[in-house]
Amino acid sequence: MSREEYRNLFKNIEPRKKHQEELLDQLTNKQDEVLLMNQHKKNRKPVYGTLAAFALLAVILVGNGLSGKNPDTETSGGEPVIVKYSDLLFEDPVIVKAPEGAGEQSGKIMPFTEELLSESAAFIKGTVTDIDFQNDQVLYTVLVSKVYGPSEGVEEGKSITVTNDLYTYTSLAGSVEKLQVDRTYLIPLTLREEEGKEVYSVLYPFAPQIQMTKDGQYLYPDHYTSLDTEEAKVVEMDTEEGYGYYGTMKLREDDSFEKDLEKLAETYLGQ
Image (cartoon, rainbow, N blue to C red; front, side, top):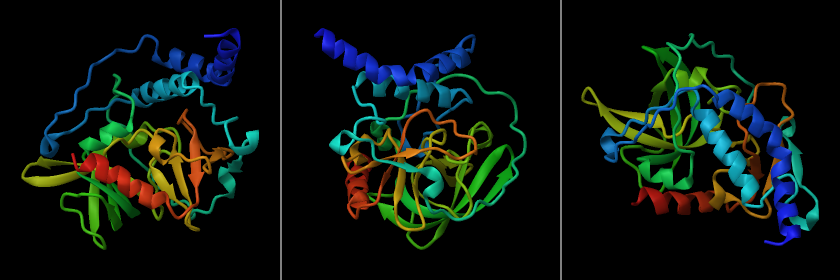
């Protein structure tokens, strides 16, 4: 590698150095656990900890730098195309008071990659109509408006209950990562059997889900690499609300987004 290539590489990494140091401080002296996913769809129940988000973010942080893709600088025409999060149109937030988490969780998991979508039973677009808390779990009522690719038991036009452990909600730093009432999301779901019932869960609840604005734009985290295009804009998170995702949020407003998502779902959910 030439001196100039090394220089460019470190230019890409340097803007995220501060975040790397913060993450290392958070992860130091924490207990490591190897967490495995059951490969059988009906019985897969991923085990997560409150540090899972930091593990994911650390890998995304380093990965973006080493790949040579700095979303703050890599745009068409050489100038960043940036939009402010505060300028996006969403339904007004509904305040949902959650109970305190039941005990501290620790450990780490594999970072999210699109390959994990093969663990999904369905990929849906739906609007959260209610959030409830029962038995150390968070329960989302989601009205499904569209199903992408193959699915197991999910129908358009009907509501389903999506259940995750409570700490997957309370451990999140900000509202972008948490699902909110009256907001529309595009979410991969897992399915398992529990006491004779089928239970749906958000596949990876620690990172932001794809979110649709009121005017039909799509806000998505950068780990959905196949959804990224040259026309995608970088979103500046200028909100005062908490924001714990160390990756980059992107925005697409073209008509091809859902077609690209359909292809992605067919690729992995059909396996």
